[in-house]
Length: 192
Image: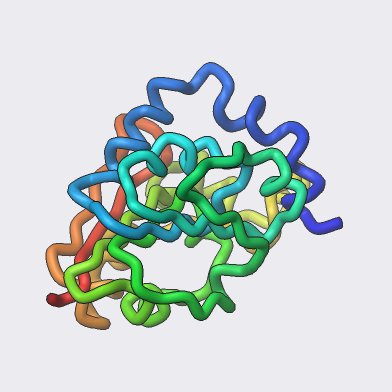
C-alpha cells in the first residue's frame, strides 16, 4: 500500500473539513478563464474534481492512489485514471491543474507544455517555501517523518518557479499568495 492509499480514509477530514471557504477560493483560481478539456493531476478523492468538472466538456482526473480514486464521486464527464502524472502521456488539454501535486514531483514543465493545446493554461496551488511552517514541514527530514509527511514533499520559491515556467515558453506566468496561508497559486499559458 502506497503512502496515499494509507492516507485516503482520513484525507477529506484532514484537508477539507472546516475549510470550505479555502476550497471555494482554490476552485475559483483553478478554473480561471479555462474552457474545453481539462486534466487534473493528483485528483485524490475528487473534492476539486467535482467542483470544476461542470465547467468543462471532458475531464481526466489522474491520481496514483487506487484508494483515493475509489472515494471520488462518479461524474458524467469525468474519467478517473490511476497513474502518475510524471509518467502520463496524455495530451490535448485546455487546462492542466492540480492542488498540491507539483510538490511531490520532479520537473514537469516540458510535460505540461506538451500536454496542453496551443493557448492552453496550467494552474496549480502549491506550497510556498518562504512560509516558515511550510519550510519546516517540507525541508527538514525529521519533522517530515514525525508528522508523517511524504518524503518526496517539497516547497517552492514562487519567484523561481515562475521564472522556470517562462524559460520553457509559457507566457503570462504569474503567481500570488493565497491569504496568509503557506499556499500560493501559479498559472501560465502555452503560446497559441
